[in-house]
Length: 171
Image (cartoon, rainbow, N blue to C red; front, top):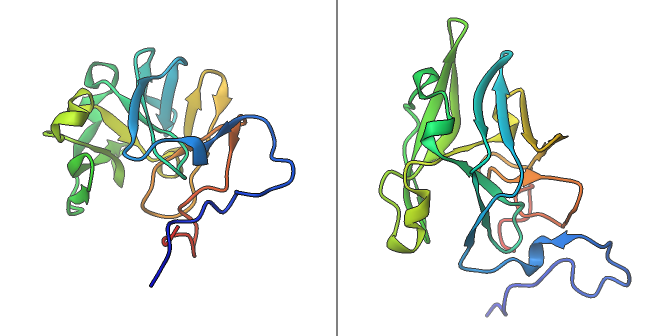
């Protein structure tokens, strides 16, 4: 029989100051993002927003959701990648980028009809930082969350460890 989920960072003698992802809630919280958000691919700005949303969930770097009005939707198309399911938000559909005569698969995802508690995310676009050339919060270029499933945006003030890398699925 397994016990409760363990905080891999618990008990550290001197954790650095910052925003600790193990203090984020579960179920996730949706908050306004207080920094400008930009996403680029092939020298083209795919998104630029001052009104994005941050989703904060225990053990994950924040995921950034950008309103569709601030995204170059003309450069995105539904992906052949099958939809995925989030126990909190519902069914996610994926988006490919179409630039320079090439298709970049599943660079982003969106919830067309999220669960009622996450209605603010409806049709907002979340980009994977690892699948574009650059993603920024303010002037800070973010690092991508490890792994191929989660799309967290890691910034200097975040304190992990972060779920996503090999061996962290059971956290």
